[in-house]
Image (cartoon, rainbow, N blue to C red):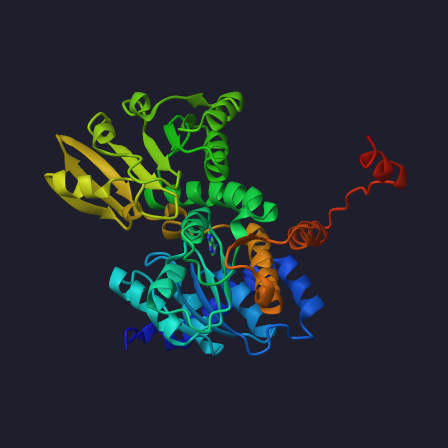
Length: 412
Ligand code: ADE
């Protein structure tokens, strides 16, 4: 058994996890509203769900909701360093099969994915597409569809689709407006700064922070870093985004021109080797490197590891590399700093993402037979429902178009 996990059955930890679930649940009103609406009909009746997600208190709200709707759930982690053990213990106490633990090895993380797939899930719910990819190489019998949470994961699935190799329909949850406009921007923006501060406990005010990438995540990080008083530089390869950053009031430069002044570098591009040798050798001593993109590929950590004279752990998730007479600090091994250093994105935004997930899972159960083997958008009715229901649960009312306005909209 890959997971001889003594912490999993720890009742004290499970109690702590229960408290964390309750806390998150109380801030995820849109999920409660979905349960009120769908709870009686049990639309996921006996459906076997295989989840590969960051195991956080917010994820436990999704899992408990799926159980309430009748699903059977097996879960592993989307990242070896992001697991919250109290949540593992809590979910286990609720009858969920969990294959994950905090600071598990990469081997254990991969075994976790296999354990979930071995239980023959019918719908896969993934974050980054690692489980979808393994399902495609090791047999996908019985899988009727899936969902994907992230930009990076959707990119991989669209390549499979283009090559005619996608074996079941997938809904790309990230692309719903009610997901990426809020979770990616405000959620990751806040949790990334939180992760960096928790790991380093340094002052942000007055620091030169370089944000690599100005997608939704980069925008969120840049505005939060500015809010803390940092001088923020943005680097981009996309002309429109670079212009947007410029007009949002940020300094825009090539990374190579920003490296000698930066104090903290944060990658969130989805690209490989954004920070590499040519940048590292020009950085000043004391530079701090962090990644908020899904994969640990954005900082060339191999270069650091194989060219440093010495490396040591300063404190948890803060490693110093002595290289070319300088000290360069790497946070959370180059992995998602917002989930490793902090606890991931806040419940208020995860509520919207996971409401899209839950409704997309129900949609797949009902419609998979007529769905093409393609990456589908979240149906507009779902996206709209999540936005409107989130407003309701926040107690915010908005105006409706009058009949005259509706008529005006449809006239030329
Ligand atoms: N991804 C980012 N933040 C998260 C959270 N709090 N829970 C699950 N997945 C996440």
